[in-house]
Image 1: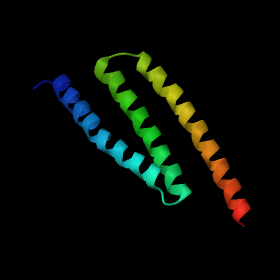
Image 2: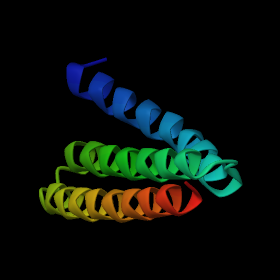
Image 3: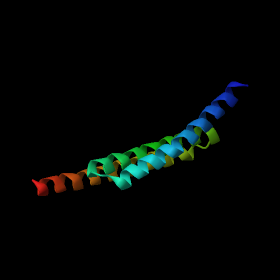
Image 4: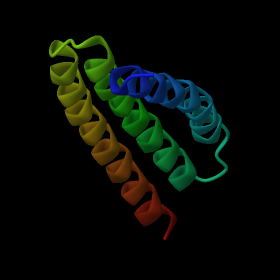
Length: 95
């Protein structure tokens, strides 16, 4: 087994391991019970999708996927900021 084949196997195993983790994070973000659990779940899904894009960038040797990962990271960051603002407003209204 060459080093390239070993890395390809490692990337494939990492992709296979990330799929159920995304499913579990989605369940946590839908189920809750608190808004902070949902916020962390959405953030985890975004981070894992970015990691998948970056692994696919190396595995498929396609550089445009890294650009997509950067754009997705910016969108994920903005969505977490919006969810945090909603959480802060709701917390102030409850107090």
